[in-house]
Length: 237
Image (cartoon, rainbow, N blue to C red):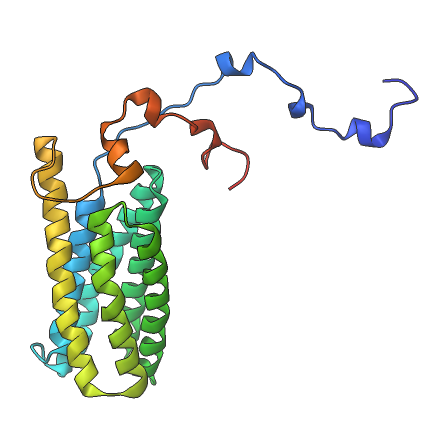
């Protein structure tokens, strides 16, 4: 280093210098996994069916704590699905399942503890979740199974949120009906995905489109295109 070298020169990262040999030295390992989405959709269906039964009066209000403990299982399952989906590089599915898991945990804890103001607080949470679900639906359309779940979840949480904030019992029952519908749609999505995995082809309509449909039929080279720019490989998220 000469005396003319400046401090700025000394601090310049050496990684900016092109090094073609890095391409031959670097190995990126991919690990195939089973799709976690059927498990995630079944967990949505179970929790929705149980909570909706409480809202419709099919489960007595005196058993709210038992409902809360039952829903806790869905939190655990959907958290697992979210972790696996992040590992599978599906940020939309991972984010949706992660937030669903958080919502079930919040409901379970607040209901089990019978906390003061629980109804109003859960109403605000449901309204916030409505905004999230609507945003997710706007980008998830190519994933028709997931999109269908969001199309039902959005009005379900909207009505539940308004019911919680206003205390109108009639809206609570409407939310319960929408929750049962959500459970049915989630069961169909889970079953269709499992049959597809078993048969290796579409059997029940799932309706993938655009890049999602292409990803199911593309060659390996197409699947790996741009891999070096994805999270976990590039330097920053």
